[in-house]
Amino acid sequence: MDDIVELLERTTPAVSAPNVRDLTRRARRRRTRRHAYVALPLIALVTSAVALRPTPGHRVTAGSASQILGTWRRTSPPPIDVTSQVRTVTMADGRVVVVAGSFDVDMGMHQFESALYDASTDRWTRLADAPVAPRAGGADLLSGNHRIVLVTHDDAGDVAAAVLDDRSLQWRSIPLPPHAGHVFDGWAWDGATFVLYRAGLGPYGASTGGPLVERWSAAADTWRTGAAPPIAARFLPTVAGSAHRLAIWGGYTFDLRAPGTVAMPTSPGAPVPVDAPRTGPRRAFTDGAIYDIGRDSWTYLPADSTLAEMATRSASSLVSDSTFTLVSSQIDGVPRIAARYERGGWHQLPSPSAGGGMTPQEAGTMSIANANQSGPQSAQYIDASASQWRAAPSYQLARGSHGLFATSATIDNPGRSPFSVWQLDGTTWTPATTAPFENRMEPGIGVTGDRVLVIGGQQGPNLEPEDDAWILDLATPAAQ
Image (cartoon, rainbow, N blue to C red; front, side):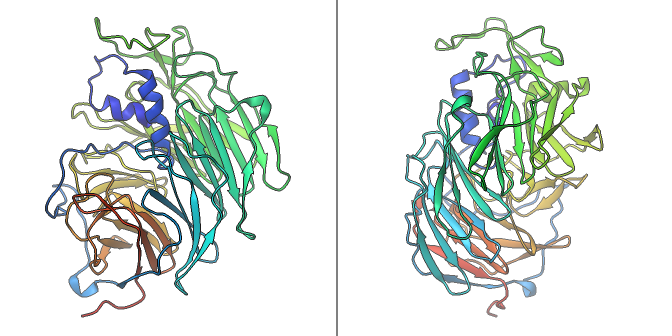
């Protein structure tokens, strides 16, 4: 999981494992940005504009000033409190569902409020609050076939879920299967079936009942147990989900004889967490499996010794209908390694040259900032089909019906520079007209047709919470 990635990025292979309680807490926090990411460290409050300067070897092709796109306007006031955290899903008819609440353990608990926005009429419709209790761990907003499931999880791993009916726009709770408990490690949603995966071991190696998959049918409102996972019980595996598949890889065990594992590096005399009920040498799995939701079937990914370093350094992952991509953590300047499973086998991908933190796996991509620093900065990204890393003017990416967008939104202090948007046209990133507001940390971003919705977030170097929303209309020529 990316929680381990974030911690190991600040260590060397000779350092023992960190406190497992913190590991688990951060694991569930990182899943909230779907499904995971490695956060950029907060180095300092930025008090001036941060230039977007691609580093050598990171070529960003930008459009000319005469090609600047679009105009900005403020929307009518949102009918929900968007000063916490915001996630969006664009529906088939172009309207945007906005959910505000406790999506990250760093934020205080906040009821999950929701609303619907129609950019063509500038009309907000207040929806009911999602019927899930605020959680201390975080939440994920999943979309399958434009239908939405909200999954919350706390520090103990307890999961709760609710589904939004795309016709009635009413939330209903998804009661969990009583025989399977409430602790799960991964989830996915294809618009018809909601899947929960249990890895089989808790963070200290205690059994949680063995690996399993539970399937909930939205049409029948019933649960049944899915096909048995073909992999051994483990804790904190790397998990990636898509609208059709759920991929599990790696993870850890205290069983020193577990097949398909490699030893984790240890440091003699390293401190032992006083609150850990079980400590000692761990081993890392080098195998995994991919679950096809529609077919209720697994594809086993055999243990592979060439992935030993990936397993001990931990990895982020990205799954599509035909590929599964792993990208390792970065340790003391050692380049990340990347690998892809495709057509029945693993092959190595080029290492990214970007040296910053890995950011949310949004828009079917993984992106890496060029440097570990606060504020907006250029990046490299890869998607599930590309065999090369590509350059982007920013690490926060969003996808719409017309392709990929980049925004200057940050996951740390955003500084004083104006909020910026670029649209990818072939290999060229064309800038939109400068926004009439300062850059923001973690606003909600929604793309509907030729419009980009920016809502909430914390603005400027003083991180002022904002309760407004703005539309960038790319179909309207920028003022000259």
